[in-house]
Image (cartoon, rainbow, N blue to C red; front, top):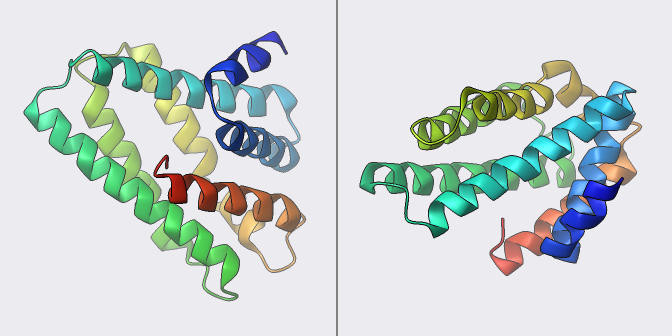
Length: 166
């Protein structure tokens, strides 16, 4: 996929690995290569657009405050995902769904003044994919077929958190 090789020029190895593993998880869970590709492409597009808006000082004070709230909520959600993987019997679907939905709302609030409906729909698509209760239950179940892949994702998340990139 040409877009994948182009994207890798602009992102670090750990982020590339995380996106690759999220793609594999999405493909493995949904059984749909195109759907998994679309989710990862939408993640990349959203992140790039937000980065451009931020670098060009397009956010007002209220939006910057929302961005900080999102950053904090996303970080705590990532920590919960890591914990759910590392600590047996700690997975809490309702907690994770609520956290993901709060992240979704904050992100949409942050960009609603700047991005088109199509971009907002990309955000919805990504969060709908990952905040699917069946998906979450399957990924975090004790006998999940995705344990090895989730281990790689968690490892990448640890590295990105240590670097301050996540």
